[in-house]
Length: 80
Ligand SMILES: [Zn+2]
Image (tube, rainbow, N blue to C red; front, top):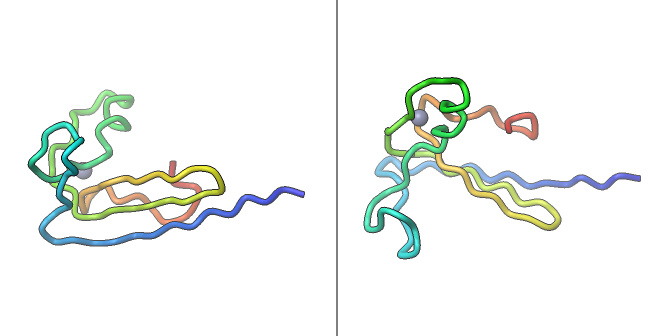
């Protein structure tokens, strides 16, 4: 029996999400998190300010992603 429960929380902040002191680029705001995905596809990195924060919490992990309006992934576990 597989128990694969994850909780996804999506928050919006019009002014962007401030970086924590240990983040590269502090002080500042998070940039769109689709940079890596675009690089893999040979596209230019997205430099927009992220207004969406998506937190995915699983059994043994927690992941936080930041995305601009254009790159907001669809809700659900299918979005990698
Ligand atoms: Zn973007």
